[in-house]
Length: 405
Image (cartoon, rainbow, N blue to C red; front, top):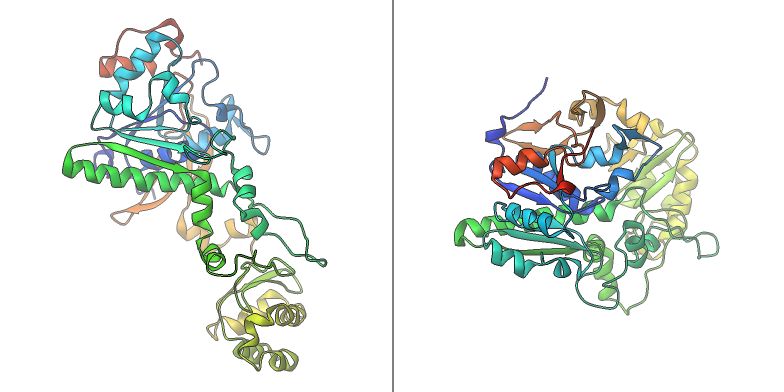
């Protein structure tokens, strides 16, 4: 059963968003605004468009572009413009004059050279919310470095934090398996944009919202980083095995069982030792003060004990007793689980030609209803002339004509 909400009822219906951004952080922000009802117009170079169109993951393409591009640019329209050409730039400025939000992720200085920096855009349209993503902010020695998820995970300490200390205490760092910094930064940008729009509703004026990958990466680590700031400045020690938190006391972590892996979160160690029937573990945790100081030895013993039985055996004992624990699932297991089915977290999007692609839906519910949409990502420049006519923009330039399917 589809729970589509009429377009005019969606919270951001009537807002026009211009998405000048590429790849993931900015486009993921614009995607969420589109999911919530905004008319998102993706402004792209006529020659190739968003570079994400060619960023193929898992060797999966769709309609001549990467499947990734289609998953993160659904519900948008495409307007082709070469901002280096005076006619197209004038046309883009006319488009900006009609918009509520403008998003870009160019490196510092690029928009100033084009003439679409925040001051210029706000002078053109004082009600617009000008939203920018950078890699490392507008200042500092890293401002001109490429802002990319893996690089920022590495520079921010996140990859090191996630690493395994290994036998010799110097195991390699481990980056996240998804572009977590890009997507978190996009979410932060959504928050800033919505706050600025609320202010505009009161004052009538727009404003500027800035986020950076590095700031979002540091914010993501606020728990352990706060402990670091209030310590002697030493890097927290990682524990042998990927036990989830550098500052968490035992048992917090992931453990191998006889047939898989299981996570155990916060629970009293003495109670846990009693439940799993380990006298050796009970002796090690008799002193509550040792649960952090001696956590490596405690976790090693717990690992030895849990490996003696299957995950289902332990879950049948621990879950009824109120222990916070869970099996570690792979995607095939997750997708087949009734809990995943109950979420109805997937949807099918459809291209203009009728081709279909299965992807995730917006995770937000409005008025108790899930948000689904079949509208896929646009072909490059497919909506240029329709948008120009709709908004009364200056005449078309040869480089701005709709792309041939």
